[in-house]
Amino acid sequence: MSQTDYRAAKDELILVGGAGGFIGGALVRHFVDLGYTRIRAVDKKPVEMWYQHLPEAESLCLDLSDEENCIKACKDATEVYNLAADMGGMGFIERFRVECLRSILINTHLIEAANKAGARRYFYASSACAYNTDLQKDPEVRALKESDAYPAMAERGYGWEKLLSEMFCEEYWAERKMMTFIARFHNVYGPWGTWDGGREKAPAALCRKVIEAKDSGKHEIEIWGDGAQTRSFMYIDDCIKGIDMITHCDDLIATPINLGSSELVSINELVSIAEGCGGVTLERSYKLDAPRGVAGRNSDNTMIQDILAWQPDTTLRDGIGKTYPWIEEQYVGRKAGKRVVTDVPL
Image (cartoon, rainbow, N blue to C red; front, side, top):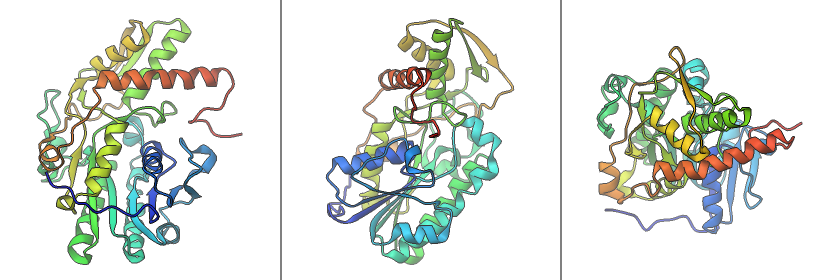
């Protein structure tokens, strides 16, 4: 295990791009809890639409696909965390490939601005969608290790954007000696995330569907695909801890690494866990023509365990047990006429 002692001083500036989103908002809260006093939180959404808005941070509404906005955001920054992207669950990723690809503009401009601003560390949030899809055609898939991204055959749109942005991070270190860090996320979920509207991922979508079924009295649920497709899912707290550790480990400079759980489950099993949280059993129907992604994907955590001794602390059952009641609270609040985190303000 190798972990550098380097950390930004508590009064040095930390920039979090995509801070109005799920993971970005959680990362800002993490730094606030650690006592950092200069945090710049940036997102293109108006601040009142952010999932978490912390008054301790400087909050700016800027579209980071614009070069001038990146220069403004990176001014005086010591560490830069890029979690900004136009993305969502599989339904969004498969239908809006151009929008996903355009996120390349964010990383292109932000890493250049960070380098010119003299930032010492730059973190890029990549994705397991960068992996070769030919290795993910069976639900009984073997866990993907970092080298499995090549030969390249990433998911169309979103996956290719992630893979190319990883290259930018690698070359900024090779040519300009800017310390960059790259984590390939595997399906992050938890409270304070998207739970409806078309961008939500499977754990949140299925929790919401169970809640809707209970509320309507129609004890049935529609599942995208045949339910046999497999994934691993990582709870948000484990993700944030991993981001921090990766970004402060000099053995991982410009080195893509998995950040995910190795607890492989089928979508049918995920539905059962959500049903258990709701205390209900639903009749299942399968929408076979719906977006379903690859047949199977799991994270090989050998590398991150060897280097950082990191592993998820939260089982899927425990994580859904924390996520389900939060989504239920949001659902009930909206039904009562209250504005919730995914609502556009009036």
